[in-house]
Every structure is written in structure tokens, then in C-alpha cells.
Length: 285
Image 1 (cartoon, one colour):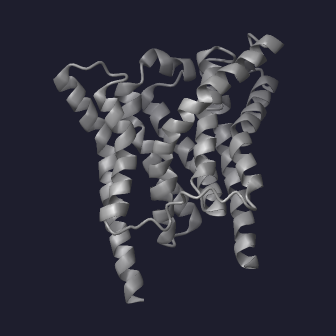
Image 2 (spheres, helix red, strand yellow):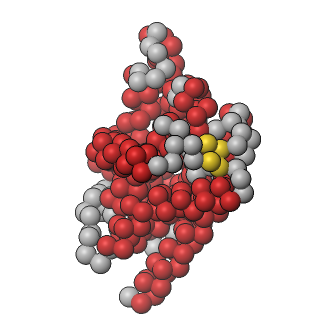
């Protein structure tokens, strides 16, 4: 019991340090860019914002006493094929559901819908998948490789744990939206102002984090999360950037696959379903 308290104390200390670092690094990076006269996008500040969370999490494991046992580096394919399939399909399938609902409500249109357009979507996805896979190894080393298992080790309520992970993950994006992401690109995704978009995006990441987190717990591996994040970046973003879909201005809060209420509900429901599956598996052991 005393050993467990010491472990929890160390975990909480390291989680506090991790949270302080990841929530401040983007602002520190922005300050460096201003001092050096760097452009906001593809700058040193943005690079620090992207890689420091994973580097710091590895340092905590190596030198902060966290160890490597729960890193989840093994793929654990055996018996987890369904969860790997979910990680690859969840964004395309739920995006299709959201867009069909939006189209049925008259809020979403598909200006370039054709076989050629669908072929282009697949082509762009395949070209972008490899670099996005590499990028998301770094990201997920921090979120599902460190933050999620460490929060879970504290034995909090599952939903509280997912909410904490999603909140920190979402809040980490704040300097990205404020400084590093070109406003013209953001406007391709939303008509909301930042004062509304940023809090809503954090809620989105809490709901997404439920699915990422449950896949992490079901497989004991970070790789489903890496693949899921890869698909999100390589598939979902191009729908907006390449103008494959158009959402009636002012309604993206409801029907956008990126930051819409319908998507939040669908991901949360899937997260609950995956949790129920995990609980049944744990009870059967």
C-alpha cells in the first residue's frame, strides 16, 4: 500500500510537470519566433510545440522514475485485429455518417462529387499517409504513449480520466490555433470565431480522446492511436482544404466532421461502447 502511494505521488508529480511543459511550450515557442523574427508557420516555435511533449514524456520515463512498462510500444496484433480495423475506419465511417446527416438537413453539399473526386481523395490520402504516420508517432508518444496510461494508472473514474487527457490534449492546441495555423486555412474549416472554436475544439478532443483512449486500453499499444491519428490528418483535413464539402456558414458547430456537435456525440457513444467491451473482457479474465 505504501509503495502504491509512493508510485502515485511520483506519477502525479510527473503529470503536473508534463502538463505545465506541454501547455506552455507553444507560447514559449511563439515568444522565440517573435524575438528571432521567424514567420509563424513552419518555424522553430512550431517545431518545439510539436516535438517537446513527446521528448519530455520520454525524459520522464527515462529519468523521472516512470519507466517503460506502460509505454505500449509493442503492436500486440494478436487478438486485436478488430481494434486496428476500428482505428483505420472510425474517421471515414463517422465522417460519412455526419455528412449524410448534414446533407439530409440541407446543411452540407458536395460541389465536386464524382468518381474522379473520390479517386483524388484516395490518392491524396495515400500520398499523405506516410508523413502523417511519422508525425503522429511523435504526437501519440506523448498522448497515448504517456499521458493516457499514466492517468489510467491513478485508477480514476474512466470518464474523468478520458476528460483529463482530452482537455490537456485539446488545450495544447491553443497556441497552434492562435499563432501557428494560418487564419486563411482555419477559415476553410470553420466560420466560428476563435473564442467559440477553441473551447468547442477542446470538447471535440475530449470525445475523440475517449475512442483513442479505449483503443489504447483494449490493445495495450499506442499503434492503433497512431494509425487513427494518421487517418484523421490525411483524410479529414483534405475534405475541407480541397473543397470536397461545403457547409452552410454558421452551421459547422452542428454538422462539421471536425468540430460539430453531431460528431462529438457519435465519438462519445463509440467511446462508451468500446469501454463496455473492455469492461466485459476484463471481467472475463
